[in-house]
Image (cartoon, rainbow, N blue to C red; front, side, top):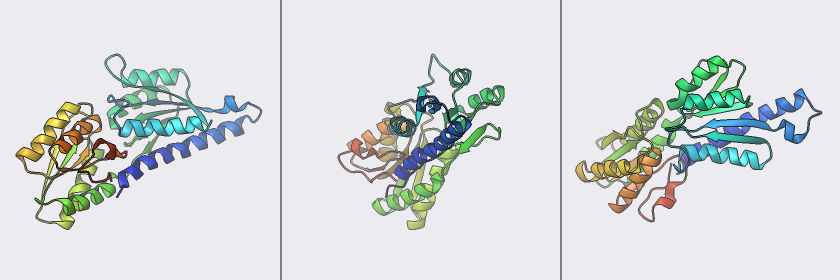
Length: 265
């Protein structure tokens, strides 16, 4: 099963559809401009983990790269960190009058909404969260459905009837991951034990290693569903070392492991 890989494809496809609408609107507004003039300018504010997470940030970035390579957009990106807040990044793109400004996850929602209220004519797009502001379009995914299938697979693979979910931060979308996973496990094995642990961080691979080791060695899980960005990469590495099964998310994380690995859902 590769249902969360489909989530990545869905994110890219959704972005492409929205960008197409913007492009057609720009072309119809002034059909005498050149192709270069009509390319849509897109700015994206990533999460603090940034590029290289082999997960959510990389998936969104890859979709924009594809659109750029197809000559339909030009884009720029910002990675919030010690020297740049998400609010400042949204402000910068707004000042530059980008056609569309994208934010990833509810971790940047408050900053986006603050800037969106200041620039009511600017178009924004929020991924994995919902906003009531009229100039913010919102996209969310039924993460619980793919996670349910992950739970079914985990239950079937588990020899100990003891599995776990390792999330990055305890935010609404990841609680959906967790609940869908639990329901899938219990649908197959009603008496199974399902642990849920949140790292409180998407960008700490070492912490992911530590938590995965605890879930296996101290609690007894033999299959772990990992949805934790770069923290999850550390978890996948540790699960491999300890010879247990892992299920990854968002992108095909199979390359992290030579054995044993359940294909990402």
